[in-house]
Image (cartoon, rainbow, N blue to C red; front, side):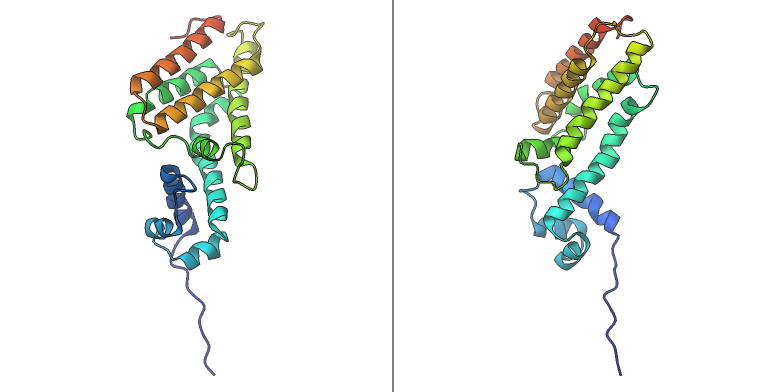
Length: 205
């Protein structure tokens, strides 16, 4: 008596997710169709739904991957125990020059999602709100360390400064996505660096 072999998987779920993440970053959730995902990833609709359950499920996992890969890479240094003003300035320098780099027109997937959906976070696990908190906490950590080490004035409200820096970066992400003039983005980053310098014991350049 014969039998039917099951479908053999010819793709890597991780590779599919990586490609989908970049597609969502380019087009947003609403602007990304199943056909676009099939074309970009090279797998069938059947495989996409088998691996992720739904387009929403795929998007949710793409948000998590973006947080784990790109946000870790850029904001991770500010989350470390020894982080300080140097890490903040490095981040501002990086995004201040991003208006003329490969991220121009793309921005940040998590920030793009916040703009696209507003308060209606499409993620089932509140990825966007956790993202905002993570950015603010990263700045807060670096500022707190700098204050403990005597590099920051003692009477500074660290949470206010962390939230301010977060808003600067989010604004930069929106301008990078919209392809604003690179000098505008750099000016915003430079102004944030001047703020850091004004509340620090040491002069920041």
